Image 1 (tube, rainbow, N blue to C red):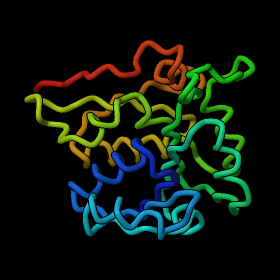
Image 2 (image 1 turned 30 degrees about the horizontal axis):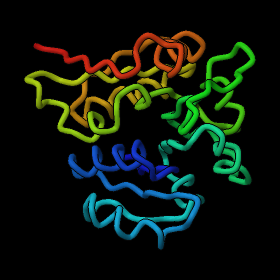
Image 3 (image 1 turned 120 degrees about the vertical axis):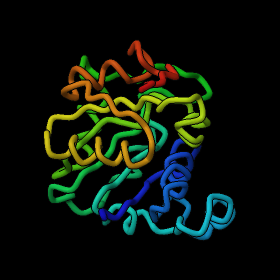
Length: 200
């Protein structure tokens, strides 16, 4: 089983940790303020979540990043190259309180993100659902809640697709970062916040 690290302990980061904990999968949760600041959050999520440093989370086999867009460069600065490991971009190029879209120079936000994680195989996922839906049981509506994902590396997408299925969601591959990333990024994409359910 791949080890899981999460950089960012806001609503989305904690929701991702909760989704893993529900399925008995251990994760390391980190933020910019250090493990001590996560004592309450970790206790609330459950025993399978460990508070760690940013470096500890970034050293795992699969690393989720869920950080306010303007803080991404600082959150990822100084980390060793990822060496072909998978990094999941769970971010959107906008943030409170102004909700002003970030300037991306015509690129998809995941293409910009990829420049911040040298050596990583980037997959865009876990960014388009509201945190409360991401944290909730994906089968509560009678089917499987849909999670979209996209990326430029087929092997990385296969791994994340399998992980999405293991978590109880129904994964849909949207293609490359340039295409699929644009469909799910907020603002601009047509798919964010859609609570779609796949029925058998």
